Amino acid sequence: MKNTSKDKKASSAGEPRARRDDLVVKEMPDEVLIYDLQSDKAHCLNRTAALVWNYCDGRTTVATMAGHLKQELDIPVDERVVWLALDQLSKKNLLDEKIVPPASMAGINRRHMMRAMGLAAVVAVPMVISIVAPVPAQAGSLGGTGDPCCTGAQCASGLCNGAGTGCNPPGTCL
Amino acid sequence: MKKIDRLGWAAGFSLKSYGVRIGIRSNNPTALEEVRKYLPNHCDETSSPIVDRLYSIFIGGEGPRQNIRRFNLLYADHLRVERSLQLDEIFLRFESDFRLFVAELAKGRVFVHAGVVGWDGQAIVVPGRSFSGKSTLVAELVRAGATYYSDEYAVFDSKGRVHPFASPLQIRQEGDFKQTKIDVAQLGGRAGSKPLPVGLVLVTEFRKGARWKPRNLSAGAGALELLSNTVSARRSPGNALDAFDHVVSNAQVVKGARGEAHEVVPYILEKLGKNS
Image (cartoon, rainbow over all chains, first blue to last red; front, side, top):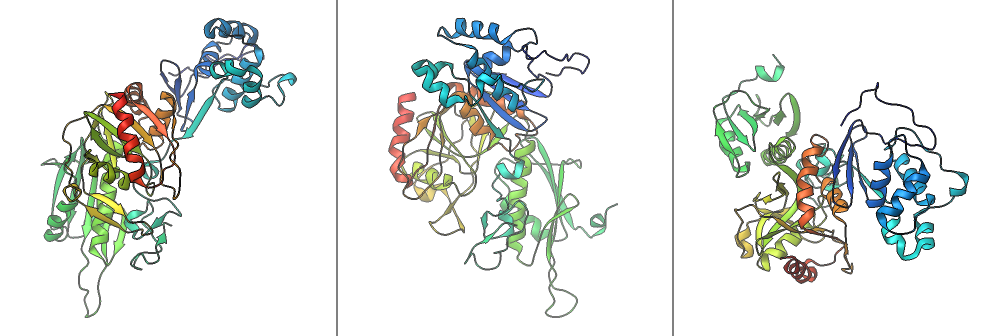
């Protein structure tokens, strides 16, 4: 899903826009998986974070998003939930512009929100978890630098400083 | 012409594995026969002169003077990847490089570094890096009656089914870093042949003395765990996510550190039984 640079518009401070270029997006029933081709990172957005990301069309205010969320999740939701989601999405480079939460949000994190919201937090608190995609050798059977080894064949580099010792003691991949 | 192409190559052959074309040549015909023992089961010889990767195995042998030995060399295309006086190191390096290259470029398949067994018509997939204890857990599950699929790669198709990638298990004894190859028959088990839907994805690693207290992961988190062990994650993320969507939409995903393998096997098989 790529937008050309001509299509991008700067979003105003209260109407964030989701980044769509260089992303591979997989919608699941309650979550969204996003692979960022620019950074080779993959993200999993829970339902709340995914809803907020989809609301980010450059025309919808944070207050309006909170109203949508309340309807969608059928629980009391205020703007703090939206800002928490936007903050995470911004840090993961999933918005067109960096978002600066208002001063009232300073120090609020998921843990605070879960305490404040109680049981409703199970459904409402936005969460984005991320990984860095491995390079092939990392995901294969070959050891990375510092992994134990007996022969160079066990290392992505091909070099094991314990080779020839009969693995006693074992070496480490260089 | 590269320097390597000017060396004397006695013979070679080409093959296809999961749609990836590989050529192998050597200055010594005996080496070509030996290297066949290191090829996985899913290879078909071809006559195509065009390949995606060319392996060149140069057998050093005796040098021009007594007591002088020349190094054995392994090249992947024009890059030297192994240099050793020990021939078995050359062949082992060839084996691991070949598997990794095929795993990355395989057509129509997504390779995840994982152990896999079959139980009651479903697969149990144990993703994880080297030294996480996958092979030991797979061996224990086979001893309990599960069907062996792989202790190295889970090979997914586009529908999320997992195919066998059978080769001897490579087991490390506790405290030992050397791997010993063990045929599944030695464990009293048998190898699977048909693709299976996944019933359970088990994200775990061995930690001495760990208490087994796994937690359920969401489908999306499970897909990320699979992706973090996917060989072609960076080359074909879309294909990987499509396959994993099918996997996690039907399978349970649990995560937790484990102690000894035999302590968790009953839990695993009971958990899978509830998902049938």
